[in-house]
Image 1 (spheres, one colour):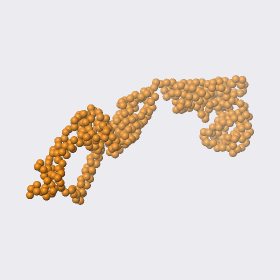
Image 2 (cartoon, rainbow, N blue to C red; image 1 turned 90 degrees about the horizontal axis):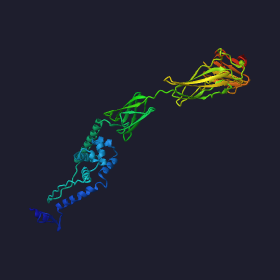
Image 3 (cartoon, helix red, strand yellow; image 1 turned 30 degrees about the vertical axis):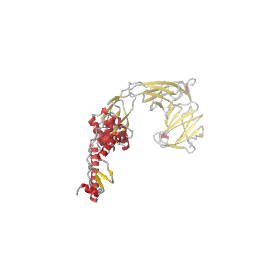
Image 4 (cartoon, helix red, strand yellow; image 1 turned 60 degrees about the vertical axis):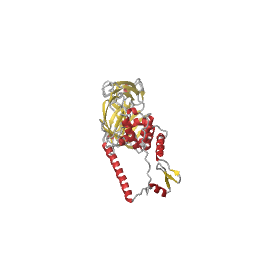
Length: 484
């Protein structure tokens, strides 16, 4: 039976050129449909960018994907600087058109874009004519419609297994590439491998880039320091520097794979040595020419470029208008000897003072000399002249070598700072009492209680562990009493 007969049975007529007529109506020519598709193709390509240039589309797609250039570099195996050139539209930085089209196709697939449409937009933006497509027009055969696609359970299972195996293969490939590639490392501060800092520099802050979450290790003379890169791969770390040559080795480690940077960075920072300078000393107290009514003289001031200050005192003679009998017992033919030198450290802020151990001077005229020195054996000195003219009685009580219970009467009255029941003080405690006529001290351990009367050291007056009471009055030696 002929085709024309078949057509008549189906209610379809044939034209002389072989096309079907249905219900007296002419069916569309397949060649016309192909021509219309070809005419629509440029318009669809032009609309694919949604009004964005190709670099903007690539950048927006990467932002939607939530990855940075370094992650894209690892995933696509295209260098980050080439990816950045594509997103900036700087195609002159790429190796050539052939490589550029290959990079665009791979990057578009990675970002979920149509590779051919992306390459077409690249050509259009560069003013190149799109490659014409060859349209073959083939007469559509007259045949019964095919039955719809049918999926059997076996086909569905096979398709799912294929997809699963492909996904596992892709995941394994990504993991293999990740484990095979070491983390990147770039030091942005300083840019130079060797750098000279200012002579007063004590710290320096390194900065750079690596993979997100990388562990950055800096080896230095005193050990190692570590920090982590943030989500963008940026990192910073501050280190101490000393005078002279400071050498640092910087490394990056991927915490997931344990791989180190392919090329660790070495940086040398140099801090110049200062010229050795003499200390600069200032004595704030005592003022020159001051007269004190007791011999506990506080000494304090400031010193620059110094580590310690030593204070000494020298006796110069009787106080003006004082009779010879008012001078304390002489320790040498020329007068009493001064106290032992006191050495105090200079603080970080340059201040120094005698603190709880002031100079104990007897009646008379004295010169007090403060000498500041440093590790380079440079020194500077200043002298102050003072006069000590006691009024009444001044008694310094120091507990040394053990604890001691004491009770004190000043001018016959219980001293309120100690109290009626007395108080037990530990070794190192220093107390000062001032009275008009007398001071009386009861000690539970006389050998652990040391006295200085009007600037004159009397030492311990008894034996350790023996309770004794001593009365101190100006012009008379200490007298033991029975007061308790």
